[in-house]
Amino acid sequence: MPDGRLMEGSGHGKACNMLESLNEMSARQTIFERPIVLVGMMGAGKSTVGRRLAGRLGCGFLDADRVLEERMGVSIATMFDLEGEAVFRDRESALLAELVNANSSVLATGGGVVLRDANRALLNDRAWVVYLRANAIDLWIRTRRDTSRPLLRGSDARARVSELLTLRAPLYEAVSHCTVDTGRQPVERVVDQILQQLQSRQSI
Ligand code: S3P
Image 1 (tube, rainbow, N blue to C red):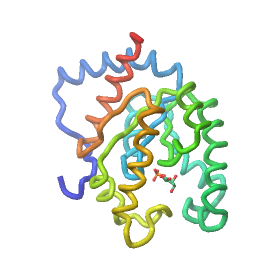
Image 2: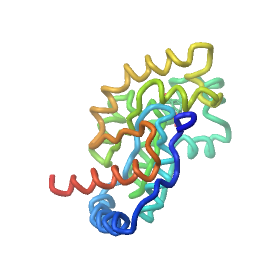
Image 3: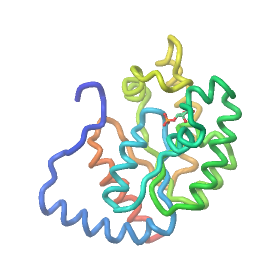
């Protein structure tokens, strides 16, 4: 697959679609008890997968970074430039608390949301948390042409992605209720796997 990007549409048969519908119906009962929050590194596909997942479930989708940008009237990169990362993290935490408590929908978070203990505790307690996992090479390939991410600016973004992943992978694992490899899979297949995993949590 060129460029390591998630691809849409992956050739599903009718039987497969019927099974998915059943899975989705029962998954929905579980799911609407709590919002589904997608966590993972920059480039993991949280926004793309989240939008599609919400579409399949017929519920709302929010991307926390986009909400913050709308409210502040500037990009995340500008927030980092003007106020620094610590202030951004405060804003991110406050918004997370608001969105997790206010919505029973699908929420994509910024990759660093797991850094704070309080965010992880809130997420684990109040949401269904799905870790979209990918390896450092794929993440770098997906983010390398994007200049909007302040933490990946500079000449050695590849090493930076790797460092951040090493630091954060245990946090993503700790906070999440299930993990789905995004790898180079089509978006639909990632969504199928999320729904299957959430459905299996009904028996817990
Ligand atoms: C960040 C990830 C970004 C954004 C900010 C910081 C991080 O979101 O919140 O640039 O610390 O990993 P995405 O994961 O949506 O790129």
